[in-house]
Image (cartoon, rainbow, N blue to C red; front, side, top):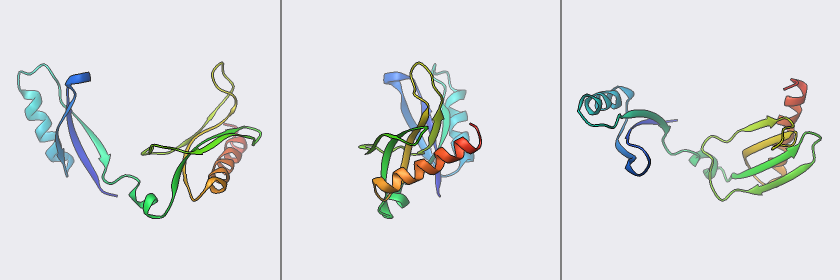
Length: 130
């Protein structure tokens, strides 16, 4: 997995990318030059994966948004119309906003496969008493 380092500046409508670098060292050098000036904006560095999710898409996988109650009932399981770069599943316990269950995004072949992945994670949460 290749990564790039992005030098970013500004806030809100002034936000912009000042440069994209192949090494953290070069990104830091650019950031230091920008921050050494008398501008009011401070530059920062963020690391990003190059070509995120391409391997999954090339393998024919689709990203699903899934909500499963802790008892295993499916609240919803649908193909997303966006890509979460780091899909994950979390266990949310009962709260005013959330019903006890497993929520998140997964890469899967189809809906059945997505449900199987989430169900396995649900079983882990239960076994670990999380």
